[in-house]
Image (cartoon, protein in one colour):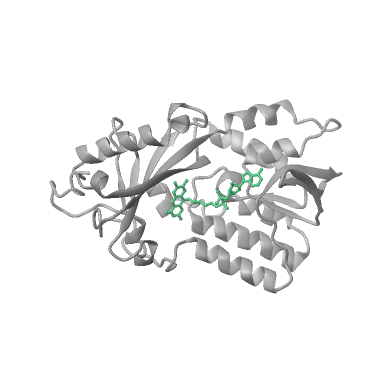
Length: 298
Ligand SMILES: Cc1cc2nc3c(=O)[nH]c(=O)nc-3n(C[C@H](O)[C@H](O)[C@H](O)COP(=O)(O)OP(=O)(O)OC[C@H]3O[C@@H](n4cnc5c(N)ncnc54)[C@H](O)[C@@H]3O)c2cc1C
């Protein structure tokens, strides 16, 4: 932090100095993908909550979901799931095939840390030259300050900027449930003590957004619990649980996308998820020494 506010020499320490980023934000990638998919005759169901998986022998044959308060059903040949791993394992159980005690207990130990984001729109051209700044001192509420405009100038109108203040918490705790006003006031006080005095004065608007399963919590022995639940989900031959929550791994977006591509390729090329693919995809890029093991805070 001392480096970031100019009190220590040497420039900011960072794990990424140069990267490509979509002009209008990361969502552009997924908007393009959905356009292509729909253009090719695919169907995309949005605003739906998956409620259950229907199993017949060792296969998933249908997905139950809720949309606009109505429960619906979708027949399927294969499932690539990015739901949280413990949730997927619970959905594979039914009264005739209850979850084995060992899997249930291991799943209960795989927990996630939530994130509440306080987003502040500002009538000023720039807060700092940095895209993100980590705040590691525990007496500050936020753990990271992001300025989206520094990723792309199109992230804010000309002459204006914004901040995303990331606050780690647990679903339902005092931070998660605090009114916007009190959290904003606390963040402004923290920012002032970090040297950012103009932010409060320049504020146009603020609002919160919430991520329930922000960070997998790596408890001691979590690998054993993860392996136990993954082995159980792998018994279902046409299902792969992958992605950050689905593989219960601290991966970044690029690895999550690679997992999805590998799973889709396996289905296209072989008609099903190959046994080897199901085993390998959730562990993709877990070789030692990758950037994700050095930067544990994305
Ligand atoms: C605060 C924060 C900042 C990050 N910054 C970066 C970054 O700068 N660069 C980077 O590469 N990565 C970053 N990451 C990591 C990145 O977001 C993840 O690696 C990536 O999004 C994982 O993709 P995914 O598809 O596995 O999961 P997600 O993108 O989390 O998608 C899973 C989706 O499933 C939905 N879902 C859950 N349960 C259900 C249900 N029952 N029914 C229907 N839908 C459900 C969730 O709402 C969510 O939309 C960040 C993560 C966080 C939390």
